[in-house]
Structures are given as C-alpha cells and as structure tokens.
Image (cartoon, rainbow, N blue to C red; front, side, top):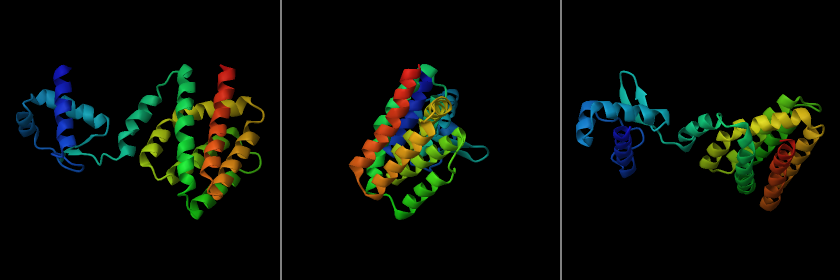
Length: 223
C-alpha cells in the first residue's frame, strides 16, 4: 500500500507542478513507470485510485487523461462518501449546512438575476397550495440549489450539493412528523426570496440561517 501511495503522490506532484494539465493524456504506462521510478503494478493501482476520485479518466482503448479538475467533478467523491453517514451524524451535517448556505445566500443577494428570482418564485408556486412532503422537499432542494448557484461560487455549490443526501432525509422526516412543517417552510422561503429581491444580503443570510436552524432544532429535539 505504501508503494501505491508513493505512486499517487508522484502523479499528484506532476499535476500540481503543471507537468500534467487538465485534459492532458498521460504517457504510456511503461514510459511513465520508468520516468517515476515505479513498478507498472503500483502505477496501475495509483491510476485506478485517482480515477475513482475523478482526478484521472481512464478511457478504454484511448489512454488515461487528467480530468478537467472542475470542483463539481472532484467533489462527487465526497457526495458518495457522505451517503454512508450514520444517523447520529445528521446533526453535524446540518450544522455544516447552517454555516455554508447562509453565506452563499448572502453572496447571491448581490448577484442574483431577475430571471433567477422569477425561477425561485415559480418554484414556490409550482407544488400548489397543499404539496406532499416529497414535492415540498424536492422543491426545497431546487429552491436552495438555485440560490447557491446564484452565489457564483462553484466550490460552495459542489460542497452543498454533496451534503444534500443526509439533510434531505432529515427534511423528509421532519415533514412527515411535524404538523406545521409545510407552512413554516413556505413562509421561510418567501422571506428569503423577499430579501433577495430587496438585495438585502444581511436579511437573506439571517432568514437562511433561521430556515436551516429550524430543521436542526426540530431534529435535535426528536433524537
């Protein structure tokens, strides 16, 4: 395993130094192994590991390439791992969301376009007056996804998307067991949208914090 780790570090070093850039094709296996002073087996294991975390892209019959290294692509691995969380860590995921999402919402207040504001309005009215819990949660995800995208920060978008699995399940659980969850969610969404329309970053951040904290507080009381 130590030999494979060494191989991973050497390939990483080539990428960080600029010797290999996004989209570049790696040299042939035999050539790269000789250049790095590695066995072909350890190089092969390193390539396999780096492809799993979207650093490298192995194309059958064509070779191995450095991916785009786009944050959204690289953070896909985080999303996969997060799905294996234990139930007793959901509060920790919600706490991280409470730190990141209000900041993204505040950033969005100064950047969001009229078209995005109209899209948010449509997302609030689309489920109808009495949405099911599933429709509400799906709408909630899309509502916040649109806001975070408006922040203009692709890393924040990817991080929050990666956290959506555990927090989605918490929101469904809340919707099924708390009587006023639907009405409260819609009210908080309206307040967030109003602050965004007013370009009031402080109010948008505050309402986003209230919105996430209400789920967190309910879940804490339920555990």
